[in-house]
Image 1: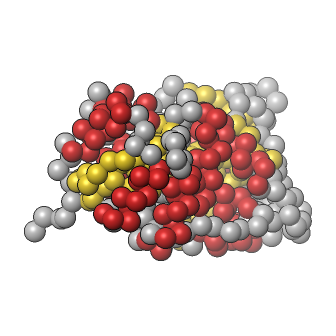
Image 2: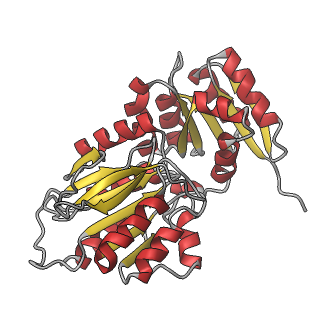
Length: 346
């Protein structure tokens, strides 16, 4: 018996983009486009009438923008919402919408250009969103941890390496807000996201979390108490600088099987090679299998490996792959991960 199609509603004020995106969705046998709307107000009215499985909305529109659509939907008719954005100035609203309960976002121009290469990230995201339990789509209210913590003088671990994809922005926020302000080791994060969004993401995290957060730079020495977000236009490794033996970031053209720019596997594999048993690897919510090979390497070097559990993952793909590979030592709910990391260092 075939699965029912995933019903969708598209809200987009550009007539040309509405035609392009509608065509992409109508060609997919697993997706049904119920209707389109040219602004947020019209879109909300059609959402209440048609009750689609998934909503796709532009961020910049007249008569209610994408953020207002998300707020209205989450308060009255919780539904997975995929955001489309192309303007860098709209990035703060994108991340606010994700915190309010939006499912994920894509760069609008990239969706159209990738379709010409027979790649359909919007369609894949819609199919993932169609399987998400509605109780996972909720606004988060978490206060950052400004308290200092008493750590052992001699720490067993020297770095925390994190990978995430779909659902990752909100999950990473939750993780970092739970870490103490006096964390003394570096945190490195590979989050699947386009470059300019990652820059805005790092700025947002720096404001709302107790730790310093920044984009990793070429040849930069890793410092304790700093969170480094890997850039989105390259893959990044951590290596030992030959002269002073400091751990530094290196950008690489090497491509990985699962995902690139940034690759979770690429980051975690390099962390495993450099830090060995003193590394903690964490794979969080996301589609696909990126991170499994990296966690496997950390596991083989006797480091500690953690995966987010199915119940708290927006998409249980990357963590599931690592768990099924047998390389995860601890499976935890999202809200438990920060506290567990602190206990590993105490």
